[in-house]
Image (tube, rainbow, N blue to C red; front, top):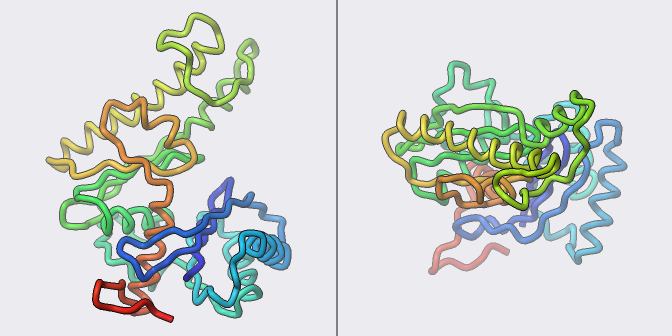
Length: 271
């Protein structure tokens, strides 16, 4: 079993992965707040206590990999993991093999979370794959039929849009993030919910239409991220929701860089 860590702007997600299966299996997930002021000791204690609560023996963790979009936390989490399992984690970045042909103008600028989800999609779903990550920002990225990472689009996440709406308009109230009771809102709250939910779904549908036309076909569309379960059902495209896609991608990358092979029917599990 390995520990995969996805450090995001709002939350950090840790996954315990079985990397002997195909696709990689996510056994447990843990979500923490991404706190840039926390020390490596504080993160180590938090993670150890949670693992103990769910019955995980630290000695069963044979490796770790980190994807991060918060540079201030990357080294903190590296040191926290070293304290926990006495192993230096792999950090997704330059020099790490991913198996992707990245077709960006400057491949070095791609965020680790986008790489990981693209690898996860390439390993598990039909290509071309269109990956929607609905977090603080909403990203739509494209992996073509040959497994090349073509790029995509970035727009404000639905949560940011809702926050900006209530912050910058005096008469609009703060509301919970949920679907409206009916399509056409007949009161302020439902009108806001309709605008955010259907507006976000429509923006995603619009990007997908353009990207599918540019690529020429569609193998699969996968949504991940905290708001995927809320927005994706209202899109007009058929979308698979896979909130473990990034973690599974990290597991695949760990396999590629350590030489670990997936288990087949004739192989025994690794000790």
